[in-house]
Image (cartoon, rainbow over all chains, first blue to last red; front, top):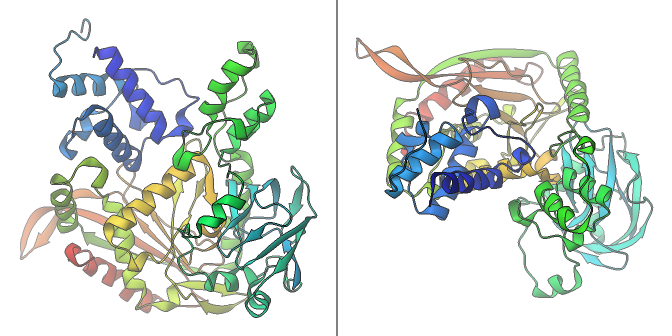
Length: 89
Length: 408
């Protein structure tokens, strides 16, 4: 799975738990909580969906790392043991 | 016994509703708790439940028609005459337009949150239920698609906008980008703003609020939640907000004067503790659907109910009992907020409990200043029906309950 594939899966699960975001264009680096008003219930549902889909059990302490779609994909890739270059810094 | 089914009032702020679809067809039997129709209100498409057994008769209102609360919508034949006479919204002419019969009916319906799906026979006679968000319905109508042909991917299999869009992409010509409709969410936000304005104006005009505030040490509660969640997979973790709701609900058992309704100046205590959980809607507006009998639910169950409610607020598929039943409201600012929330009572309720954003603060424990996680809890209550003394005891007891999270 590439970074982009993980990110696409994360976006799909995000829309599943927050269908009211389906019409939004979500920039990959946008802060999901600040910009899209994602609350703790959205977050916990998203984490559960990612667990089901990718098998990654994200501990609560790591929730802050799921700041944006890109950050989430990078975090998940790390947990999945996928080495990758997420692009130039 | 013949009766008429009337447009129900789903809260003090509802003046009218639009019939979206009859779920029951003429001649079809319905049982208490069944969904008879889907009605669009300011809060989205609401599945309207019935409060007695009967048989659907002739519809008096057409799909798409908007009618005021109390308008006869269909003829129905009621089975249990005695109960029906007491409970039927259409059993007798309403004394006022916002007929209190709705509440009477609610009492006969404990556990209305999850009407059991019994009787295998029922599923044979009942046509496929179409759960769909208002945005999805509108889009389907625009594209000329039948909802029945679509597969739903939202909560409870609800058809949401993306289902219509993806089906529309296959079935209908793609519209040029210029014609893209303005982004729409479940509820009609303009109408909801109007409804909130009406309810809150009435509240501030009629209800003499008094306000109390109390700082609660949440350290034990947050530690308990962290420990609880650390050993559970994500889908079984709970939110701190669930503990707050439970603590309020359990404490209300001792303070019945805060749990109920104002009926033209007289207090009517509620028979259950149905906590309306204020849920913000992205893009503006809010709705506070009921968690029924919150004081009696295990935390895990309470979490599941809250999760389900929030999901259906997002998708715009709430049920009528959830909108009309709350006996008290709890509003939590959550993780991203400020210290304190001053609530405005949602009429005809008589109290609202608010929680600010918990945060680490200096606090004195055993003579030492130590960092603790604190939250400011507030109570706004109707001074016609309770006094600050009782209110203060209530709020203090909520704080005490939260010191023993394992007993919640």
